[in-house]
Image (cartoon, rainbow, N blue to C red; front, side, top):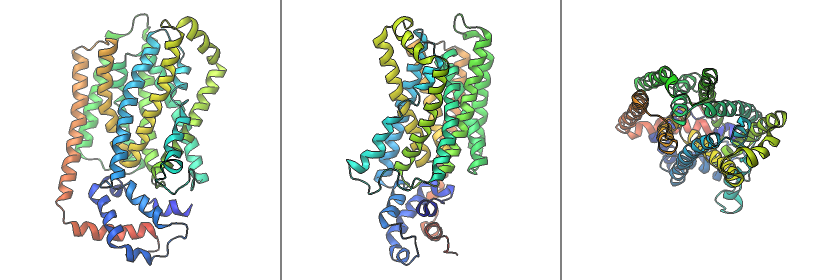
Length: 409
């Protein structure tokens, strides 16, 4: 639709730089009369324009609220889903299809953030799935296939590896994320980026060298390395998923549309998992597993499965929201920070081994993360020292061109 295409061309600097976002609000207040004379599409009303500015403005109350809520969802979902998945396998749950299926089977829960703002809270005038174009549907379906494969790889890796090893291996997704972000969304590579990549790579190499000392009992070397490389594959696919989503979200002007795309993706991923389960006898195996195999009983089995369904939705919602509100690289970095919590969770809850090599690996992971955060802090601090009028003049012209491509310098 013309609304989304005209609103969705901000550059990466508009997406990531707080002072530029505040410039957008400044334009909305100070240049309202100038914007009124633009020949904008008739379908783009003032409410839509304000919604677009507000939801991506770092000084907006709704922006900060969404950011905090989505990070909480990401934190709770990432930690809980990892521990619940491991709990399932430890107590003799063995179906990797079930573990894959629960990751997206909760897609109906996304109806809540899609419909509640319009039908109950009345905080938006946009009806659900308004402006949802066929092109967005094709993107959502394609990315849903990628998500389904990623979920399967994650389940295979998590079934064979200790939670701490799996979490630290998944931290390598940030390496892939940086490279793919540079290619797909033109992410600028800086010293802090490279430093983070090098440290995380060393962290993963240390894990690989020390992997044979903590193999679960009864697990062959072949299966252990299958789990090892499936986890690396999951990290690579997820690293591709993040910048692709950032690119797609440039065509999206509100959080509700993000959730609408997410529900389509998860429907596709859930369909793939359901087909796999039906083909491999997973549904009948699920019933037998709950009654006979799972050593904590049928009730605990179903509670574990349903809790996993909910926590995975929190994780995906938080991830999508972080990418929309910030960037794919920032979202990946936040997830890397949470992986350290998963490591500690695996050690505390399941008594996973945590020797000297893994301690060094964790330290390198955290060192890389905090060095990146420090680099971002210095960048933002230096930007705030620039004369605000220069930023306003540049952003004003750019904002006019976003709203109407026919406006030139």
